[in-house]
Amino acid sequence: MGNQKNILLQARQNGLGATAITIADNIIQGGAAAAVLSGPLKEGVWKNNWLYKVAGPGDIPAGDISWKMPGWLKIVRAFTGLAPKALQ
Image (cartoon, rainbow, N blue to C red):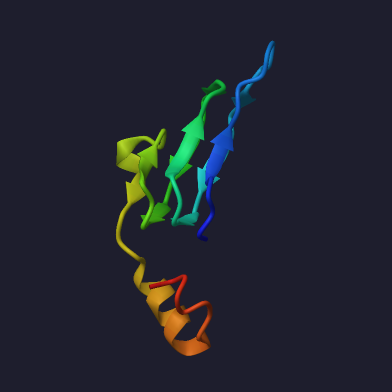
């Protein structure tokens, strides 16, 4: 939470990129774009990723994100006091 860079896949000279990676059930909060994929990502699976106070989704497919804070996160914050400023 509050990262300057979030999900990042950098391109490399003669790099193969990534294949069949699942990016799921993440809370991506704060910072620049949620995902920047400069290298190839083949057969990637994106699901249940929550974006909150980020500059934008970046390279995450539009149908695979939610912009609302999940209700369970509000409950965790209320009962644990976990990082109250970070989870607003």
